[in-house]
Image 1 (cartoon, rainbow, N blue to C red):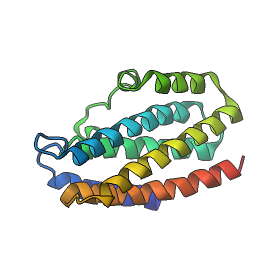
Image 2 (cartoon, one colour; image 1 turned 90 degrees about the vertical axis):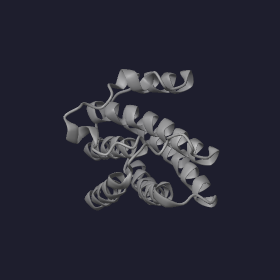
Image 3 (cartoon, rainbow, N blue to C red; image 1 turned 30 degrees about the vertical axis):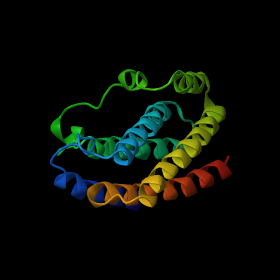
Length: 179
């Protein structure tokens, strides 16, 4: 886990330093815009669920995974928004969960509401299953961009993100197997 977080943080920080304007700036082609929008949307759902799991998960390993996921989704959001300095370094707080939920679909907000009603092992299992689904969606988004002709920083972000997602899927499978 530490290696993964260090790797993601190091590479995202190095990519983030070179981003002078938001990746989602005017002039991006449709594939790049879709990549950024889709990655941020699915990542936001993962972030909201993981913030909840940090507080509500029973299993310490699930809680730890959720904490890493929060950090990684916030870092990825910083990079994709083109922030030269991550919010955590500026003293600004990340967006409140209620603000983040406003960009989610009704179905996604219902999924979060159902998760909030669970506790104990039922919560942990539902969270892990939702994270597995979300990570599979994120993997497909990365692979879709990489199958195209994207170059430069956006391609580098997708390559790194794909690697971390694959590691997370293995870790999620291990966590579900311990149940």
